[in-house]
Image 1 (cartoon, rainbow, N blue to C red):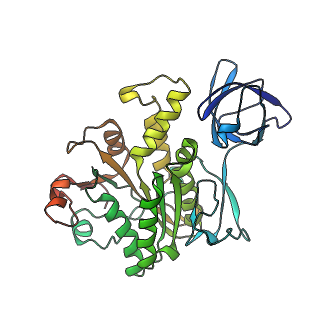
Image 2: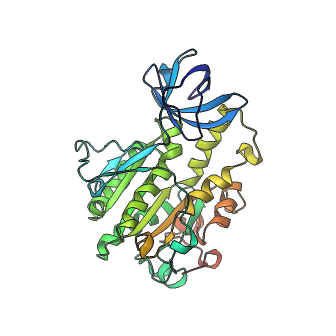
Length: 349
């Protein structure tokens, strides 16, 4: 990485741009523009670098100078994140002032999954507080269990309840709630539920707003996972809820199309499977050499119909260790949780 190198913006398209002349630039490098905006290098084409802008993208114009400022995007992590609502750059959004960085560490938002020799057997259950799940579809600490169903079929409510139940059951599980491309009113309501249940004090909320740059929503789940990994290295059991992966896939599709990347099925880029698999492979149970904690993931996906044949849905079903299927028809009958246990499975628990 050459911090002294200076490039120039060749073209701008919405929240993306193409830069040229920046020697030594690498994938995931963070760059800054002469206008004050920042961005992440997402790809290359010929002698140019493709950049997605994190903020102030409306100020970037053709001809602006560009410099590399870091090898990869980072997040500052500490115990002080508990009980707070932050954006994907680690800035407080809850109106309670800046987050104290005393004793904090800085971590890259994306690192490779830990190798097999640092992993342990998944042999302890996650207590969800739902008898149907805990008895028929048990989830282990370190497992990845997909929550899928149509819109308003109850999977988000159940995921929030599982976090709330960690406080009610008096577990010491640290929870990370990642809201991706979410409306302010919806996330505010979910945070209020956590606070009312007494679960917010052991939860970190990473909030990617719909009104934010698409690139912030793109990195939001990686930020949540990096926070989870830090707590895992402290020997903690960590639960991460991704709400939801369908919106994350659409955000990545939007950025890829703006960068003129070849589209595959349903216009998604060809590496969408790799994007989600390398994220969820960071979960697991780990031995004492890696910190001794666990990371359990509950990724949420919204299906377009009752069928589970959507591209992103089937991708995530193949990546995860099981799935819980929610039916809107059951929810309309007043059943809670509206889970179709006959079509749900846990491959580990």
